[in-house]
Image (cartoon, rainbow, N blue to C red; front, side, top):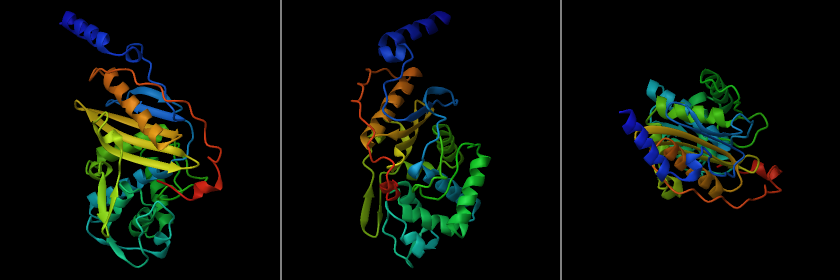
Amino acid sequence: MRFILAFSVMLWLAAAPAWAQNGRAPALNAEAVLLLDADGKVLFSKNAAEDHAPASLVKLMTLYLAYEDLESGRAHWDEPVTVSRRAADTPRYRMGLRAGETASLGTLLEGVAIASANDAATAVSEHLGGTEEDFVARMNVKAGDLGLAATRFANAHGLPDPNQRTTANDIAALIGRLVHDYPASRTILGGKNFIYRGRVYSRRIPLFDDPGGVQALKTGFTNEAGYNLAVAAWRAGQRFLLVVLGAQTRSLSFRDARRLLQYGFIANGIESGEEPRRPAPARRPAHRRSSASLATAG
């Protein structure tokens, strides 16, 4: 048996690319990244404990509390939600909600997860919490319950606020708990499109197909934060959690994630492959922390 195991390892090492054989992950663009296997073992980490703006990864906690209420019976997928003026006026990204109209809670949650709609996140927070402020207080209590010691929430959508901070470590823990505690959340976090008022909202994200296995994914962007990404993927029955924070472009955040997932699959003996090519270096945009960061969160 030992001989067979040793021979199998030798075969895998012969097939694996050099960067997997020597334990080095591919070169990455993002400011902070973290890759965990099914046992919570760190497969790769870069600045994972470093303080960072979460952008729309905040919505993972909004979804966690919504699913908590759905499972407990305090809320129902089809129940109507009346949109307030404050929710309707929440800046982009948006579903285009109008003050006074009603939408089902489920539709709004799809807007939060798939369209990353800030107006939908505000409407959900007011509906479930009474006010967004009370809902945010609940978000912070839950963060403490989940052990997210480095995370502080200031709103339900992720638009910039100096008091809203997190780390790659905490975001990995959050998405891990979300998909574990509420498996139904994978349906909308893995959704590629939904329709509201005749308009199709689509996510064209290559990670769903390459390298495959991605079942839950949330993006986030502000000029302050850069391009953020949280992923839960399954391959050969094993779960991988991946967080990318502060990539310089959307495409580079996806490229970093793809390379890390491939690295994880190879490092765990699930598959072999060629070493990914290093992305061309890019400078941080000069406007990264300008006031324009107040305008978007996706």
